[in-house]
Image (cartoon, rainbow, N blue to C red; front, side, top):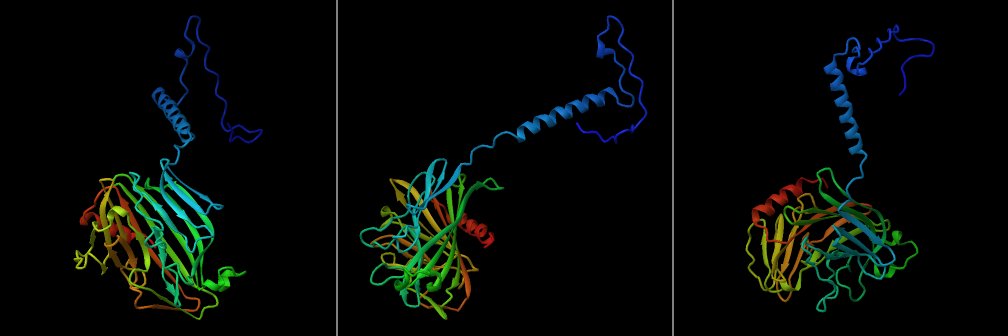
Length: 359
């Protein structure tokens, strides 16, 4: 213990030592208490010191293991997020692909709610984002498609946040390239669009929810004078739903608007849209949420039931959006999956919570 005394000086006069205990006494039991320090106060001080020692021991104890983990394999071009040892998400970004995408997305019970490259539409890749840029098709993978080229994963982490929510996050840099520039030595200069994509996954066991936030920060490429973003009704953030949802999925939206052409396609503006069905006889739901602060405001949701079930959040790109050289813009969406069917009041409240999150 360090002392506040300066060398060669006393802070106070020395007190005489206490009298020695008498023969046959019990030593400290009869020792004269220090002047000015009552016995009860000295006992309290010892208790406080003991409590501080216990707390100190607790603070230095090893923390419990984090229940959520994120790991990437650059050679294989995959990234996995696991919760309590079970897969929740697989992200695919191999250089042989024409776009990076979420290949698998699971409920907490273990159902994968996406399909990757089904025989009827091989370009449907799980949960993916794609549009047309300056007349180049980045959605369908035929003819001379554009390429969303993976560049790097500069950041990834997993933790339990201050609200005790298990959270995993990763960031990716993507160059949107015309087909003639895929192998360009300086692909950044050739990019039509430069994207910083951030995906954040959170787990809410109470509501049996896995929530995936999808953020894209975009900048028009350095050699592009004007960028036109367009596409059919379904281009945007789309998910090919489980095979068991085909022809039987139940769609609902925040405005309660009817689906008048259930056997074909609907495009309905809303705060959110959900698709409910069964997998192995058990209830599963997928919901998508737009944001009012996205370009063009709340999403226009494309839904399809036959011959297969599909859901996408779009910007109504039949009316193109245009951006000038060097211009920046951002998009944010939320995708949630449940191992139960959630009602409209729950999803309306979830939309309120989501819209309060910072972009």
